[in-house]
Amino acid sequence: MTDMAQGPGAETAAPDAPNRKTSVTKRGGGDPGVRGRTTIADGVVEKIAGLAARDVLGVHAMGSGVSRTFGVVRDRMPSGSRAVTRGVKAEVGEVQTALDLEIVVEYGVSIADVARAVRENVISAVERMTGLEVVEVNIAVSDVKLPEEEEEEPEPRIQ
Image (cartoon, rainbow, N blue to C red; front, side):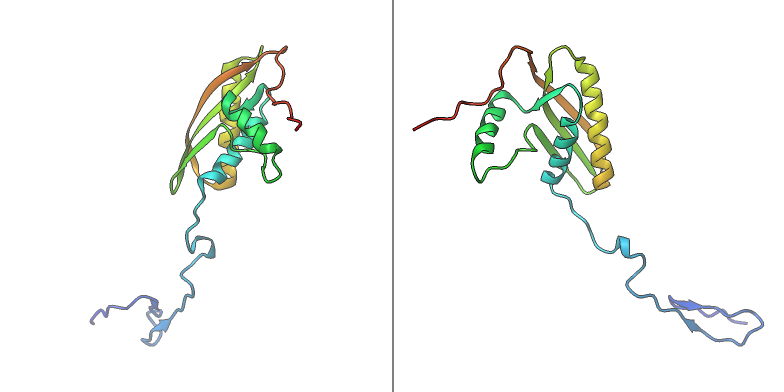
């Protein structure tokens, strides 16, 4: 008896059945969920991380004083939008991402606890929404908001 090599998609019959090939046709190459590639822009991850960081109790603002001041001015312009990504920088690869956050904390809170909570919230939100693995979340505390400090909003100019 001689073995015959069979091509892809062929099935062998039972030993007592007549010797025949049955063709199995697969369309589209398998699971529809894995056909094609999904890319996620850095800005998408930055928005998710920015919103997740702001949700943490003890985070007063995101970004340095200069970026917050420019952001307030930009937000007041008719075409300006709320800068959700202020203070957030993401580097996105195919399956992983790394984040750098700059935050301002409220006076009196434990900076270590706030940083830990921010990391947990950001990692959870980014991984859940994007499927990317967050390899690191670096946090820089750039300022502390004191209770007696006024908000850093510039006065509107009257002309």
